[in-house]
Image (tube, rainbow, N blue to C red):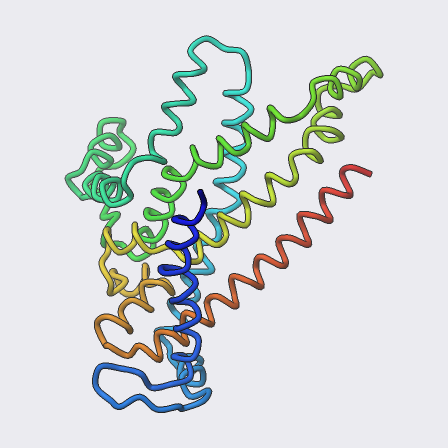
Length: 282
């Protein structure tokens, strides 16, 4: 039953990873004969100012992780209550998740235009006098894409947290209330510790997604990281090096460096979250 899925993973995930690793140590490109060059690509990467810019923007993008996780937990708590039309709200919050990222990015790009709906709303409310150039202002461009990522992913993480909240036995919370615990003590001593595995999972997925962000930036700002490299992230720079400069060996080295950074983030997050969960429980 799982053979077709495993086959797809082998062909489109595992094989490219195994094949790409040795490429990072070669000069493989569309212009030169392939030869082994050792660590030259990595030395080149750490001397490349564009790579540092892309890496800085990718790490800055991790800011979306705590924001999206906190909002997702709050939304999960809201839709976990017995309210009228709660089913409608669950579906409404989840709609962005099943919306194509390309379509969503194009829609948000239209909203961010100087004559777009966002500027129209701000003018109508009297909050601005002149249109804001969300798409061309370097200080606003990356933040605008972050907002798209948050909007797109909220429903996904909300559903995971909702499953976590519904898996917590009601008897534990009821017993705590009988023993005199207030609402905050119940949340701190029972809900949060039992929800920590879900927090770890969602945080790991969110960190990996933030560092590897590509679709929304590519659609909204293209492969050059405009304006003035403010949206140039590691994945977009890797694409540019590989498919515009045709320097596949260097692109593979950049991808390997980013993969190591993601692994380091994941290990730190795993240890911190696990330690935090145990502290709450004790």
